[in-house]
Image 1 (spheres, rainbow, N blue to C red):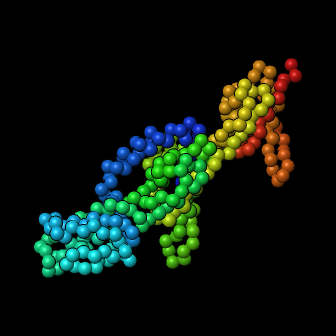
Image 2: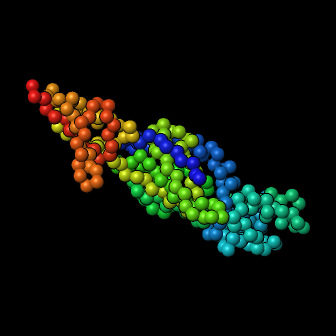
Image 3: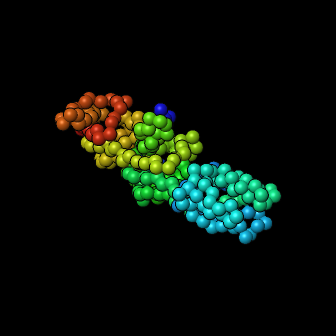
Length: 277
């Protein structure tokens, strides 16, 4: 079974803070960019430039079709499914078999087209994106314009299992470590044909004798005290000892007497009544 990463819910400020963290983390990733490209598995419709050192007449710009390319002197070469490094080695080996001495072959990917990923939900530009080499969850979120203000706590990745039984697995990643804390361990690699869904945040509602009644984005582990703090605290007329939570359950509303430490859930209404005195 796929590993599941759980991270705390992202706040509204966390969603807005994604841009500088995206830049910082992508700079780290860029330092290993050449290595990542070397490990990219080539596929149909990728456009590649093949060069052979000191043999300009062998330079070939070609698109992979039926997992093959055609090279001067050696003809069709099957490279679909090989990494860039493996394809370079295979082509070099074919040229070394009677044509060149110690050929040095390089492949540069001009256009990536063989691998695609979908990201939907609370991102600014949901849709289908092509994978440009190895990629991570953060890179795909960045390509999709970042999180919206309504983004929730989780990214759910739907992935086809790579085994004989087939089937589908789901990886759930909570986003706070990724967007606020820059935790690279939460920035998991994504794969061809992954489908990513960014959940919508739940809200809690605070009413009665608080300074700023309204709806507030739910955060994992929130309590009545946290809800009241989001509403900028109690008024002078508040009776906090009689605070109630109105919770919808099975088509009805339940009233729950609450303390400051009572946990709240998404869609709860926290009501602080007025004091009798």
